[in-house]
Amino acid sequence: MKHPGLPRLAIISCALLLFAAFSSRAQNTTESMQRLEDLSQAFRHAYEQVRPAVVLIATTRSWQQHLLPRFHPRVPDLPEEDFRGMGSGTIISDDGYILSNYHVIAGADSIQVTLSDRRTYQAEVVGFDSLIDIALLKVDAEKLPTVRIADSDLLQVGDWVLAIGHPLGMGATLTHGIISALGRQAGVFALGTDEDKGYAIESFIQTNAVINPGNSGGPLLDLQGRVIGINTAISTRTGYYIGYGLAVPINLANEVVDDLLVHGRIVRGYLGVSMEPEMTQDLIRKHGLDMDRPHGVYLTGVKPNSPAERGGLLVGDIVLSVDGTEVDHSNQIQTLIYNRDPGETIDLHILRQGQRQYLGVELGERAEDRILARGHQRVSQLGLSVEPLPPELAFELGFNSHVAAELGFDQDEGPVVVVAVDPGGPAAAKGIQTHDVITEVDQERITSLQQFMHFVSGLEQGRSALFWFWRPENGIDVRALKIPE
Image (cartoon, rainbow, N blue to C red):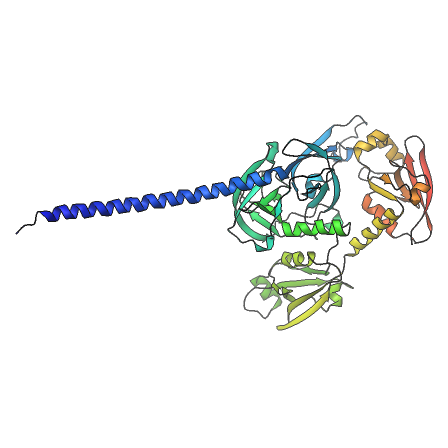
């Protein structure tokens, strides 16, 4: 016997199932849309929160003869046009301290900072560390908007990140992406002197957030709008973004800030070793190492009379960990040591000829850093502040190529200029003035700021040295200054 009600029940059941399916799909779509909206809201909130503390940095650098190719004939001294550079900065304190990249302000004659509300200030360079491409600037202002700082040691690959800056001079711009890699080495060498080459500390955050010229010095943020890094470079063959952006971890940048504000200079821990970038299977075979897989960092050199030598390290040692942190790349060791001060002891776990050992090594300070610090201290005790003579000021003073040539300066050499004199100091007592150009000290021609500091640091304490000055109205003058004890 047929039951006419069954087909109707089946139809109703199917309808209910379809309705439930459509309802579930609609609910899932709604939930997905809500998650995307929540993410967009996080982006917007971070941008609105941080944008006021991201500044545009505009620099000028006068055209210089030595920028011409070597084969180019010398151009007569004429009023010079300015090269203009752009970058970004991140306000870290309400009284005007700003983080940026060293390469943004390197060689600048003037630095102008523009806030989001269009106020402009002239900035001074407090200090920098070219080894990690970070500079600290200061503007004369109060109650400025600031950023919040996160702990970059807690970052993980895959975390959402945001980049804010002034790319290509287009105004404040927000881009987003993820952390693609941590501790990345990218061959971005130190931008300082030749002495610094090879000491560059590269432990970048790599991101696919779009970073272009002009972003440099701006912040890389987490989803809460906290700074996790300072955008510094792009991996590119064109000069523009092709997928890889790099940022200095904020913890590393903060070491620069702390050193400059506490010590007035960069104070770096120094071990005194050279290392293979990373352990490889080929390296294991080459040295016949007793290990089943590549790990640790192989030491290729130990500098004589260095903390490493005094601590018992040997060529061929494999460093497995530093203070309990496992290491597999040389830049990991560099970064860990950078965060420590001279005089501190680090605990090293090493592998030597198949045997595991533990060593405690007291860190020192690079001889170059000590020499420059002593030079800066002595110049300060003399009551002077000096800088390399910028082309703009040289033109204003009349220190042109003819004067430089008469005094024996080559195209790539330059004296230093007095930019401030302590009224109560020894220099003022000898009649030394602002804008005096220091050309020689004890018959040693001054060719750069670093060379000047080197020479002054080596002068005998307690004796007088002859400082030779050039002045627009008087030409060369000489003053004897007693070197502080």
